Amino acid sequence: GAAELELLERLLGLPAGNKYGVQGERKVPVLQTNNGPGLTGLMTIAAHLVRQAKKDQLLGSTAEEKAVVQQWLEYRVTRVNGGSSKEDTRLILKDLNMHLEDKVYLAGNIFTLADILMYYGLHHIMVDLTVQEKEKYLNVSRWFNHIQHYPGVRQHLSNVIFIKNRLYTNAH
Amino acid sequence: MGFGDLKSASGLRVLNDFLADRSYIEGYVPSQADIAVFEAIASPPPADLFHALRWYNHIKSYEKQKASLPGVKKALGKYGPADVEDTTGAATDSKDDDDIDLFGSDDEEESEEAKKLREERLAQYESKKSKKPAVVAKSSILLDVKPWDDETDMAKLEECVRSIQADGLVWGSSKLVPVGYGIKKLQIQCVVEDDKVGTDMLEERITAFEDYVQSMDVAAFNKI
Picture 1 (tube, rainbow over the protein chains, first blue to last red):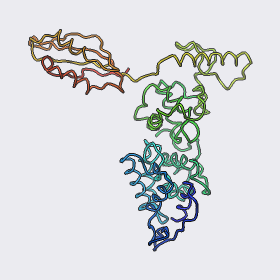
Picture 2: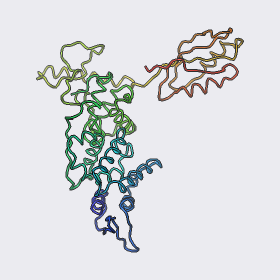
Picture 3: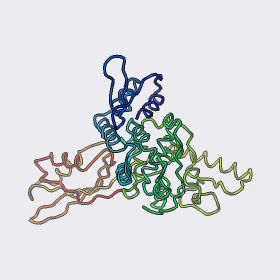
Picture 4: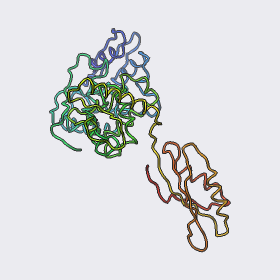
């Protein structure tokens, strides 16, 4: 929620100082602005910050890329939040693992806001996965390991370890 | 280190396994390491080696920037899983056709002389390689071109087909094959560069000769 947005601000190189609040039961983040009611919603505020930092390419360049970025941002906001059940988590990892089979980033060949927010959203899940689970969702592990090494992304979050030599699977 | 022979299925499998949990050959950004391995692969890996294919398509998207990627290209034997034996190593075995020793073996202790010799050969390989044109994916296609009837001038038909010129298209030998009722079809070979010429384009241009050509089919299609 709000913590992620602060991480995002730093990643984007924006000066600190934005004020964030939360709204309602589901703790939806709100950005207080100088005039008016403020901006509500993780996706909305994140996209706004990206544009403020003039890094629009993080939202995708072609129409198709932009759509894919939006798709995964929507997925992140509707499916991945603090209160996911075990079953929800399993489905999320399965979806992502399938999607990432032939892609390096969520949007294909470019790093976008979708990767950033999905990383922050998944961190607490990935931290708790067993070695066997990390191997099971091999593509998610590969992608997560890649994103956490991307300059500026991880910041103070813990580094999730992925063992290089696979213990459980030989072939796919 | 090394992947074995990247032009063989077994080498590609080693690469595929290596890339299962990695986005790049070295580190977390595309570098000359990726370019070195990319250039060693003749054509896109098959769909069942999907990690290698994912990596291949991703690196391909950096085609235009490849000169500016970080790092220095090293011999292929320096990349890849540490526990794979460098089968392309120096040693005393004779290699197939290459008389250049491509990949020095890291494991053994090298005497000064051996090191110098290896370096010399590496330099020779680099210069030899830079003169060779890049490997391009090509296919050999056999086309069946059918005329309207037995009165069609087959010599003229062949002339029309051969007149079709395109970058990446080379016409080969041809023959006339009887199909019945006195009608003969023209069977003609061609070699195309996959990126530049496709069968759709060939069909369009051949069937454009409406006076002579009734239809065109692909009789055989082989990757070379």
